[in-house]
Length: 148
Image 1: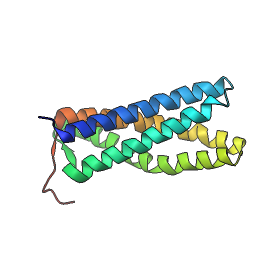
Image 2: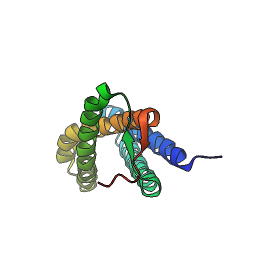
Image 3: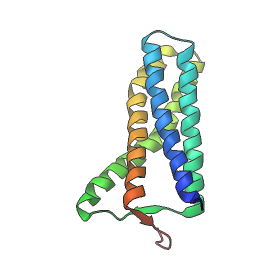
Image 4: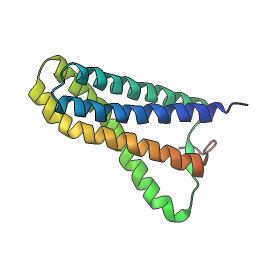
């Protein structure tokens, strides 16, 4: 029998990893001066990140949250990673929209200046999201009934 919660989580993890890979490819393309494929790849990265959010929220809405139940000595590091990931993930969406807006308006100097900050944030969020997913896959338990 298919575990829908696991399937949604696996799809979300794949989407965020592909989004990060697309960002790296997009950066390489613009460094090579490719102004045709760079925006296409970066919009693909944005679409993949948006799809990740859909699958993540669907999993969360259907099955609730998962809490860390791993080794106690990892707890501090796990929560430091989770908090930094969550804060930067919340900032990343508006940053990406700001980049797209400036690119569409052909304000490339502003776009480039903000991209220097946004790309590392995006890659950190993608990588830490995948890591957190793997940790919870191995050391997570349903947090149903835990009111927050």
